[in-house]
Image (cartoon, rainbow over all chains, first blue to last red; front, side):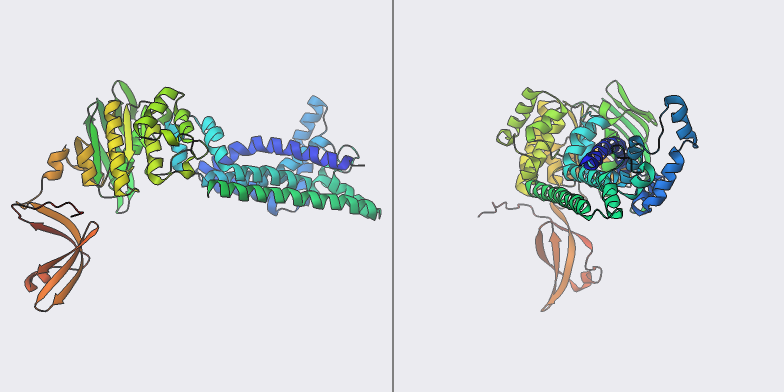
Length: 222
Length: 286
């Protein structure tokens, strides 16, 4: 009965993991560069916030379908279809939730004292060591915010998932899509239960982020 | 022996200027770099540290740090750098800050002992006072036993008492480790106490250079006392005119003649001097 929730959380966990790996170098670069392409990259990254999910979903479908070069390549080489399965959900989610990972990390890195980073370089430490031992530990609230909000946002997505993944039970039918279908077939009891669970969990997640950040602020006297 | 011959275009407050420096520094020297703000002092330190690019040549003993525009990264230079403020790693304790530079517990404890910080070794930077932070910063800069110690106005944000404690620490570590030190400073007493050679900069060029005592004590004329100050007010009291002048933290009143008044303007920089032959020195508590 709770399979859609399981799929939602599996999808969100994998998305957070992949997005963290992608966003770490991207947000670091954006926070340190003065290059002219920075505004373009920032605008591209922020697009999923303003685009209707249907637009995003449509382009992802077009790009991944077997008629596209990418889709054809995966079909011919690995015999994998990139649409209407779990893999396509992960790809779509990574686009859809990208700004929610990049933006908190970027503003966290930007708020870091430049002197601190320079001191690390002058101590003979390279960029990687500086990021992992100096930068990240000093932006814990931003890091936690990025991870939790990305997770929650992925659990909460609906339009993109429906377009790219469809609603295959046990494969692509996530909680939000399940609720939509219950309402359609007028199973209001099921919709109530699912919705209440979603509401409660989302609130608890957000509450924990804000509580952690407030505690962190008090602890370090920021 | 350190040889520096660098040039760089700067966008200063008064438009474009070019920084041109040609210097030789001997091992163990303590150089003070002074001059108005925007004259390029900090930029020189940052170029030496590899934090900014420049053209020219930097040779430290046998190693080339910069040839033409090719330079080695800050990581590969043997540099101890002390920022003006706030450069400690906030996520690490005092001791961890030192050990992050180099895993040498013995040296870290010795440095903390030399600067009376042993008791604070497990505290985090956010819980330290400004002076304590700068002492930790100094210790951390010494952890690599650097060939070149660069101090960028490290004491400017501290009060007088803390300053003199830190000045003593800087000097004792400079001697203890026989390092070569370059310090940016505006404070003549600090420069006098610490440095062996003073270099004055203006608009990116060296305008005065020599032994600290000669550079600082040499003044124009034969006056014994000479202070620079800012003219705050000219007020007429009965038949005389009194000029109120701010010198450092003190406000002084001086009588000026009607004739002199016409040449002064409030807000102007003025020099107050006197030819006293037997000045009296009093302890401030008397």
